[in-house]
Image (cartoon, rainbow, N blue to C red; front, side, top):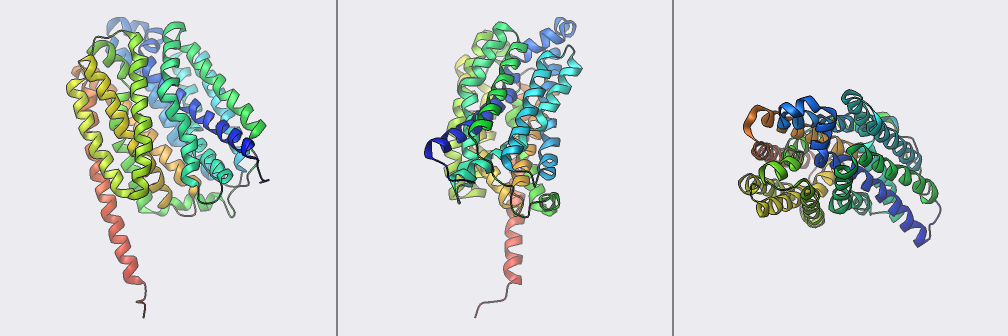
Length: 410
């Protein structure tokens, strides 16, 4: 890679962050627009029972997340030798096509297919764009590289998702998704214009990337993220009906609730990054403890407007507190396969998205009320905490066994 001027470097980093912004829009805007999607696509079911129809519409969240789960490791393995900029451009093209298809498809089934296609590129983008950003920042800046791309996602949650949600409520959810597709197309053009080409990792191959799956810790840490983060998504997926049906607020309030949750996520991400640098595994335990407490609190106070806003902020902060730690932990337990480690983390968190949305929809459809998803979230967070404790114990045993195998120093 040729030496970049400071201006060119920052322009390139902003272009990559814009892709993260688009991903935040496409992943989280659906949660605020589920009632609109249900009314438009499932009118008969909505007339019979709005809660049942909203729960069914939640499959657009689940299917997108399943696309991420399937696409992240697959693309990471198949593109191990592809230069990073070329890979990012291809992924942005997939986002644009899949999002346009989601907006224009005439039936619920075809929209689900479009969401799945768009989701395929999600995890690989965060991995490839993060490594690309790190290479432009120089050696020793892997964490900063991922932070640059993730900053776009957190910015989306603060003001992008509320704006897109407001647009969808005013002009229709299809217009909102076309606007998201425009963000991806703009990002593609920006990356093409200002991001330099960077070669793939030396010695990279599908076999080397897939070797990450030989580590029991990779599987266990991925399970921690997949189950534990499901608690956050069980709440976040149904924040719109909780706002309108439980707290008794208007639909125009939903974007403000999402903005407050996004602010909490931004603060949690910053504080969590500092905590992860000090003690990686301990910050995961603290994060799950915080998730359990804040999700339970949400279930108790979200029926009041002030409680809804306070609970949304606290859940956002507690959940994203763990984000940097889990990302770094998965990369550290997958040596020699950085792209796969980053991709597995995205697969795991989006499996959590799918699990939380699907199970939340089931308990709501069972007639237990919209806040039942919060108590489901408490259970998932407790399970995540127990798995994290098991991962720490396994790591301690592995470290002790490795030390015993090494010859004593004289």
